[in-house]
Structures are given as structure tokens and as C-alpha cells.
Length: 113
Length: 112
Image (cartoon, rainbow over all chains, first blue to last red; front, side, top):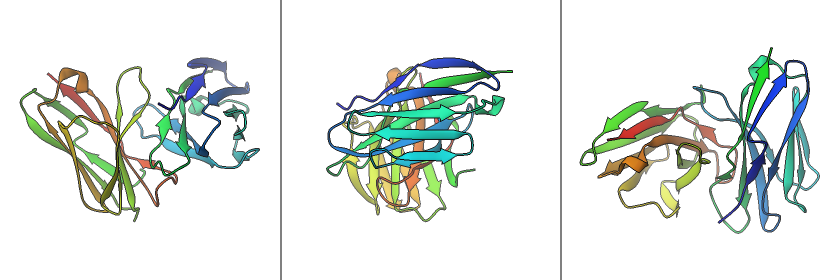
């Protein structure tokens, strides 16, 4: 059983503040890590696919880093806006031919105006 | 819109009913997936299809039966479900296995 843990489970952030949260995953047999954003009443939407140790990816005010040796990834949001309110999911793919994603429970982010 | 559609969006069924969930993608993707989201649990992978062939069955009970007639369509046939099967069922597709997945809106299923 693969263990993908996300923390914190939920987070309240003031509009304009920056924030970050963590995804931890097995450090052995790594293939890729995905980040998704899931807004209420919508479908999960892909943010990043990360494959290399030390990877840093950025999309607007959102960025992510990856450390495959220690098994963690951080997602950062700079200058939070109300539209950033969503659940942020990370998902792990192990090497060796596994085809599907193993998801964490997500971090539920609420931006307070 | 992600290009992945699911019908119905909501479904209520009794334990003796037979029903089917449908997923369709118009993205030209080769891989399709079924996931289940129960309350307070992470998204759980159920089935994976690649070029219409099932490549992964994640120990799913036989009362769930997938069907993939072509790369654009995926079904989940439901038969004699239990109340604990009530959940959100999400379909996804990706260009190839292990690439970014595009999710449908889900079917909210209630088993009485």
C-alpha cells in the first residue's frame, strides 16, 4: 500500500498572504508526482507534473518543488486570492509499470477576504 | 470544461438494481480511468484502460464491472451494490499512461 500524505488537512489564509503545504510520498521507486486543484462543484484540474529531483515548476502565482530523495513536494501560493480557494491534491506514480495515480487526501485551502 | 463528460451526474439506486455510468472524452486520449471518492477518503483508483485494454484492476469487487468499447468511451456497470458503495465516481483520461489526467465532473451515486 502506497502512503501519500498531505499536510495540513485544511488551511485558512488571509487574502494577500502567501502560503505553502506539503505532500510526502515513498522515496523509493519514484516515477512522477502530480499536483491537481479541485474547486467545489468542478473537476480536478492538473497543475503540475514533476519527475526530476530538484524540479521547480511555476504557473502564475503557484509554484511547486520536488525532492525525490527524501520523498516530499511543496506547493506554494504567493499573494493568495479568493479564487485560490480549493482542495489541492497530490498524486504519486511509482516506477515499475504502475499505471494509475495514488492520491493524498488533499489540503483544503480557504482564502478569507 | 475539460473535454471529459460523465452521465448521469446524480444516481440513486437500490441494492438490487443494475445501472451503468458513462464516460466520454473527445480529447483523442488513449488511456482512461475510473476513480472512487468516498467521504473523508482520498481518491481511489479503480480501473485503468489503455488502448481499450484493461491494464489495472485495483482489487475492486466484481459488483463493479468496467467496459471500454473504444478509446473514447468508458462504462462502469453496477450490479447489487451496497450502501457503502455510495460515493462520487470520477472518470479521467490521459494522452498516454502516466501523463497528466483530465477529469470529468463525476457521478454522485447513492445506494439505498
